[in-house]
Length: 506
RNA sequence: GAGGCAUUCGUCUAGUGGUUAGGACAAGGGAUUUUCAUUCCCUAAACAGGGGUUCAAUUCCCCUAUGCCUUGCCA
Image: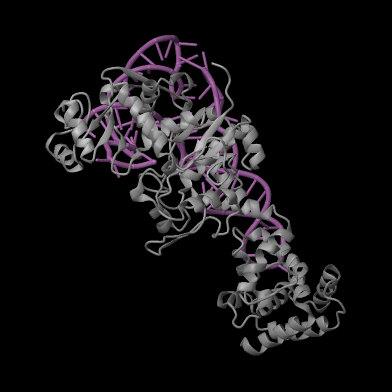
């Protein structure tokens, strides 16, 4: 077989917001494609007309745009293999369904959902397969005329794949190696439903991957059980020579308890499970997103990349470029990964503190405005430089810096108890005079030396002096270097805060 | 029930037929700091169990257990 250009696809179903596990799947596809100089396509698998949710497609596109994952082809970008929305490919699928029917690899079935449900109730382990298909209402048990009559009368039917019994089907998985399954345990899956004239996932998936020249199918482990069916479908179609290689990724598991990560875990534990905030059009419910929660897209990418893959070194911080260079499917782990969102927070912290003060200041500005304050970017950058290391999210900036904008109106009791001494009022009264004598608060080091020397000459207790001073400015025993604080506050505000505190604190 | 996949510190994971089984997050402790935080250092923490194979198994094989996935006219 000649070397084909790598082409992979991400094929979500527009049934709601994109789950974070889907984001990781797409990321791996992207990394794999770029690593090998190939293409990533976006295909929308909307063959279930029942579950279509408006806005989901736009959401998906916006989410990957935010994350810096670019599609080379597909919905939203175009390409030569379109349309890329399965609902727009009805006619294509019909042709291929017919091919399978003609090859005796599929058959019509008229059993109603109710009849099938009844069988499942009555017969333990019932499945539609080579053992049971002859008891069904289908083109294998009905005469050709009868079948024709029913179809022409508009009776609803489905087309099922006719699985050949008792053959070992081999799936060569890039992550798991050789997986062998006997076709006896496979059932005659529905390939096509006349009700909406659409194929099911299995058929559409194989036809599209083939037509779109997909070389590697990288998807979640939940697909592994149906991979043998897919292999068989390639065989029945006669496309085995260009069948893509499969890679089934380990699942993302709940942070605690059992099972795979779900939306509810996020609600319960307080972290997002979606890349962007999602406002459910039907219920009006709002689900939080990584973007709106203040995560940096680079942090999300980095975090997700390491959940199920690692380069085999101790390095943990990776740019997208590095990930592309280092990524390889054989370093993908086989077992499910618990979703450890605390590590995600750590990544966000790292990315935030690695940003320049100016960048972080620009993240702070809108938050500040929301609080009703404005600030010169230069001054804000200065403030940010003092508190940047303390934050995990941009929103934390306010908590760390609010006292720069709002004078304390009350004073933390614990701090007072520990740091406010009987001599504090006198100390501070005298300190005011000293501060008043300073000509420029921006001379941080110089001022500090002057004040410290003064304290030493008076033989005052430095800790009491400075901590009391801090409480009057901040309202508690916390915050960055005090001479930076008064530099930002300015002489007037500094003195007024001290004086006011002296009146209030008894 | 059936089929499949998996199993190294609490979590994400590295790793090897002979290692003090490594790193990170989280946890605990300490140092630094005029406060808080940061930073730095330290500590505790794992090869699911049982059989083989082998001089030697966490590593290879088998069994068991456990977990997960699938079992829809959803994807």
